[in-house]
Length: 243
Image (cartoon, rainbow, N blue to C red; front, top):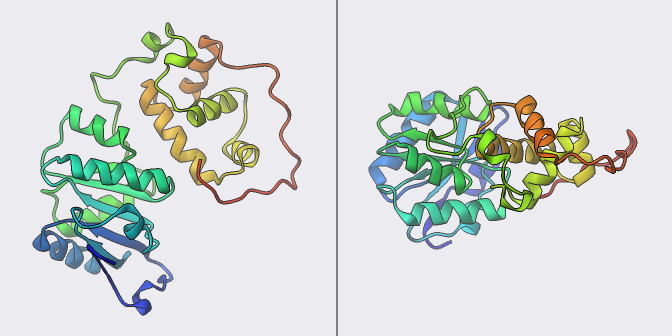
């Protein structure tokens, strides 16, 4: 696998209480510092690392990681392109960008590319493991960038002008109609984690903080239809798939 260093098959076997981690960075010192810090935490299993200039999304995902740390390489387009490619193939894996500088414009670009979070590269490696864990557990949320449009401004736009993908708009309509995440997952034949991922993007793009505000936006905008068919019964199956 050109451009990537993946550990031995034995290391690829999931540990009982650890998350599978891949580091994408072109600086060997950065990789080694992170490796040491995460080893001390005991919460992550480093299954490989790759050079972002000599690897691909498929190569990284072949290691079956649960979280991918990507060095921004001084906020390069290469890092963003890799992030978009990873997200286009897998919308469940957590992708966290490690950045030298964190400002509104850069945060917006990373999140628009599908990033799960952004953490400063100035963070101590041991503390980094804690921040990654808390991000994965949903305990850290970065607010909508200040220069983004407010929900009230967006209500004046037509449905086709909303900054949402077709799937995000579909999920917004369903939750505004009272569907739970489990209901939405069953209807769309995706996992509940996929629904949560899309909802986070909806909140960020609409400039709202939670499900209630997103539902209010949908009702005010007239997005909720009365002809949404009932959900399947309790025996409905939920398959793993991309949202």
